[in-house]
Image (cartoon, rainbow, N blue to C red; front, side, top):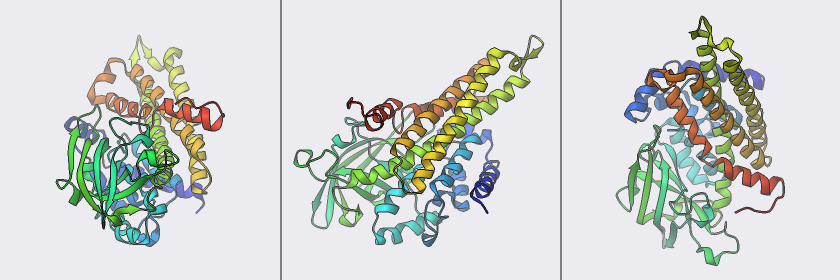
Length: 385
């Protein structure tokens, strides 16, 4: 089959799976703030959570482009990929920089669903997006590293067996570049929680289990180190590009869901004897939102193509995330306006998806930081921060 045919078949397969989980499933989970256990099990059984794991380790061995289609279709069906999507983009760091032993030990079990790698410990209360200023430390003591510090807004910890952790192994004042001296570790949460790692769950505006983590002399084996000590920031960058592309795909899915719902509503809802969609004041915003979603989708595929071919994709990945997040948010507002008061009724699902897509104006990187990156690294303007 050609790539377009494979992608079309993949879309159909994911849509078929998603049909088993209608709006009511996601609505009830949202109201209960519950984890989509049944949906995650179905994804795992179909192999989709192991999409990027190579065949030799039992995964599907798909490209990032194909993986992005899976997440897009989940969002387009009305679902929420947030509670488990990290397993896809975290995988890149382990695949590219993990040791042969780590890959043999963990990847087949992740592909089979025996282990979940869904937690990504980077963000801290004080440093926020200034990652090189993080204060969590990992100090080598014999055959172990001892971890101390705090992380915040770390999602899926309570539904993950493993977590990728970024910590400083060389003090900031002792490194030549701020990005040096950071290291990545693969932490076994099953043994860490309660033995030096304390987890406090945070309630947020969407159904996404997120937490604050407190490390108090947590001992992890030296074999937990991924790649070389001190080069972790570079490793994380690989994952960040994949993350931005996959999140962009989710936003595309959200945008299409909103446009489709708004179009259906505008066609069916009759006021003053005619469909409200007959009014240009209603139809033009929907049409404009559609145009912006489709334009953003082109950048998503361009960024994914660059990533899959091993070419530099930082600018494209960031632009894809910015355009897709903006397009989805525009479509969300258009859909809410089209539904009017009904849009605030939980039974119509607009307000739920509205809250979910708003997140991507802020996370995993804010739109302002993307603009600052483009200004400096693409346009050559002076650094603003």
